[in-house]
Image (cartoon, rainbow, N blue to C red):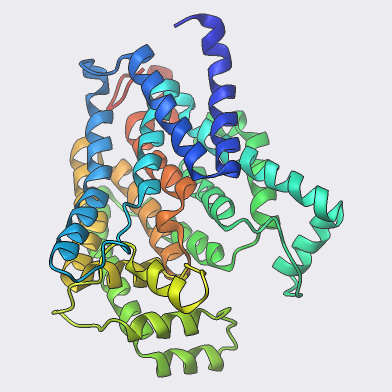
Length: 402
């Protein structure tokens, strides 16, 4: 590849995706395809043994979304879901492709570039805020996000702020050498998260930090046992959460007792639950059905604000358990077997962070969130030694590409 082209490639990549996200899905998907084709043509990873692990990881993170779509098509064929309500959920597939493309093109710099995309896109949102609110965009953000006052916080761009929060998952494992390289980016991301404050991120950060401290202080044998127990615990917690949500009377009492402002989530949950049931024989309503129900009931508003509830209602109890087992147990075991215990722990912390966000938000189908939560574990599997500075004096090609 021409050196001048290589120098400008990261800038072009970041700007195109950031601008595309502000324009719309069609533009974002178009840029994603274009960069994917560029990666295949210029870098030519196919057939290169150094990319074998990356290709396998790409497949591992793509299987479950594909199976969900396939299952939903079966529901359509049997008349459970209307074809008009069926969703291909393209944002998930394009986001996974973008994560793969970033790793092919930028290798060790891919993670830094991923978070730079998030910040640049948010910076464009900030620009819009200046046009409508001037410098009061900052005071409005603090008032609405931290002081609980009514008003518009344009910087609370859920997709971008929640994606930026994933930075904590990598900061936990970042070596001193990498931290020095990313000081400015770290400050910018922190600034972005604070201004676009989301309550659920506090819980996600807390859960991931506790897990990190726990694993850090365990022996290798105990780490493996803890990982097995916590993987099962993750599945049980998600199922208990569903029981909790389906019991609307108890759920509402809980919110009232602790003075929690659910911001109408309890109303959304109760409506969606009324169209389903918590039962072993509940087969699900199909991909896109929850958005369709929300759209019909709430004049075009489509978000139920709980991806755990949404996924359950769309795929049913049996498939939902398989879905949870795949992410909490299947991928954890696969990564441990192919890339080592440390990488599997890092993945588990990242997936725990993800499912905490799933409790009360819609990140499952947010393009940039899917992109960053796929990029992080894939990157750490390929570049663990480099990123954590483990044996950095004698870095070898371990599980990765140089």
